[in-house]
Length: 101
Figure 1: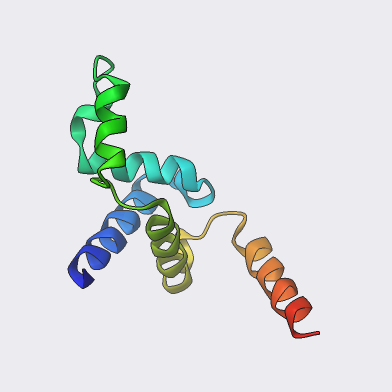
Figure 2: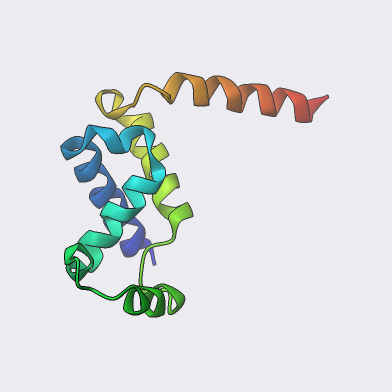
């Protein structure tokens, strides 16, 4: 399990570096991770049903794992932060403060 998490982090870091548009778009990031896990997804003739079957069998990384990996990579690598990074940090601080009250 730990090895899979490290692999996701490395994949996410590579994608954030190569595709800056993924820095603020978790959906696009997830699609690119999945396309790396299953290259046939890039083929326009690949049936959606096959993707759905694999998705339901949990053959792809979980979107939450991808999001968390993005957060960690951006926390450590300032140059990979998107334009929304500061806003997300500010919002998370607001939420934590609201729950303390």
